[in-house]
Image (cartoon, rainbow, N blue to C red; front, side, top):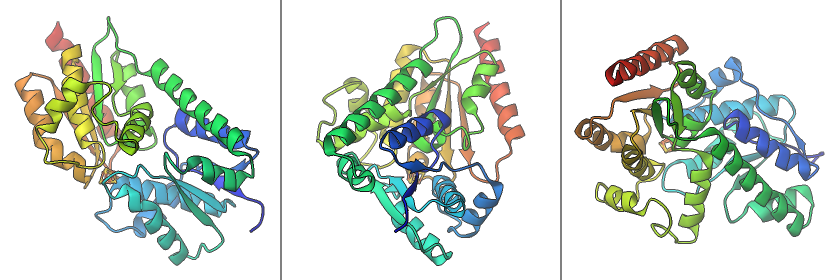
Length: 307
Ligand code: SF4
């Protein structure tokens, strides 16, 4: 293979830039996906209709970077229960069918990230471990600075599928929209939470650390593992209710299995506890103006009710 030119799927500006910084610190050449209607169109045309939107968005990212010279693709693999763990296989298959032959695909998990990056960069395990630890700490810092509870503004909790909650290219900059209407967004489905939960799941530390009371309550709603962030969203909602959240925005890709499964529970918890709820199903056919109007109306109604 020629010189490696590596890429990762876009997952929100801040997180993606941190990943870029980490890869560059291993002296790797990196190309990041550009937002491209053309790549998205091609991805949608070459995906099953009922495939969830993150799959199509990531495929669009890969098409975009392969067209611009990338030859090494990374994919996040949570090792969870949902179809995300199969994405990289289906992406690789589809890209090859589309005529992209000269690339390699690597899934990244909590346990294989160091050996994989060591192989790709040729750096030592010690060096790779150091930059991975730095990445986790940088991501934590991003989330701590960004997601803080407000004492003077109304707090709008965001729950839902993680990619949809974290990627401003997918969620129509929901965070910015909430802030522009004078409210404080709190995204409970952030990447730090995702990393912590993945580590706990990998090392069987489930339910031993953090929000234990809410996790126990959330477990009562389900018959075992659900996949995605279905259970996390139930316990984060219960936790935010106790913190006095003023409203909840539930973001989900159309046809998302875990989010559709928990929908009746989210509705019931919000109704019982009188938490205003706005659900925004997202796919490639959404219009930004529509999302804008719905978010604005939702926040204005909460403000009026509080007055
Ligand atoms: S959690 Fe939802 S969006 Fe993610 S892979 Fe599963 S069905 Fe798709």
